[in-house]
Image (cartoon, rainbow, N blue to C red; front, side, top):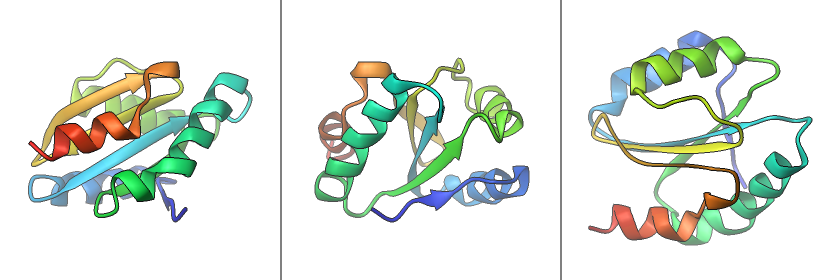
Length: 112
């Protein structure tokens, strides 16, 4: 799987600026949490098959909590971990955390 990395506030700023014209997903991951690792495995196993044209960004929460806080503030989504947020044309169209993360559901939502 080809993750796009969010490693700096500027990365999210750039993504946000182009976000009103595109669709993208952000996966927020805690590298110390087994539930987060299980969710990451599900995303890695199915994302490209279910959502081949939707870019997905990886955020290591332990290394970049400041970016996670900015995402929560800008997108109006309460911080959770693990968490998958999908933005289409600047609006959050899907957000889920823990075992509710479902790439198939994302594909269903984006197809409508």
